[in-house]
Length: 135
Image 1 (cartoon, rainbow, N blue to C red):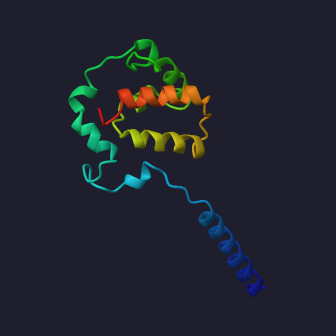
Image 2: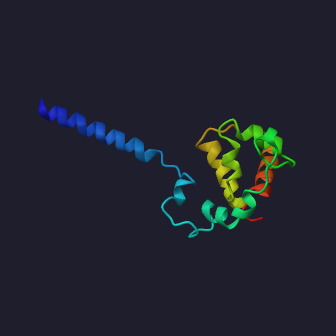
Image 3: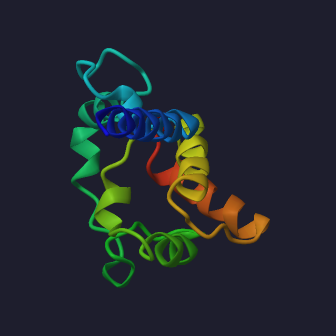
């Protein structure tokens, strides 16, 4: 009886660990965890510190959760608030490339519904124009 119990436990352990290894996806935010702020140009905290003086000054459009007015603001608002507040957006100061990576991660790992290509381009342009560390 003991050998059967041990064998069952070994099989369960092997199957469980196999499932954990089978699905390993990079979380773009976790990839930077543990590094001191400022040590990596893709670290969102580096950009936040660099632009702290401008990040707090703009009030934005109250009807759009405080997002700055501009082409794509409304599309961005409705696309993004389906999953999180505009505060998440407004605190970002990442590179343009990082916005592309975050978009892909939100679609593939977080289940965000991807809009039509023209709307996607409009939203990404809006995000990069207003919340990029490159401007």
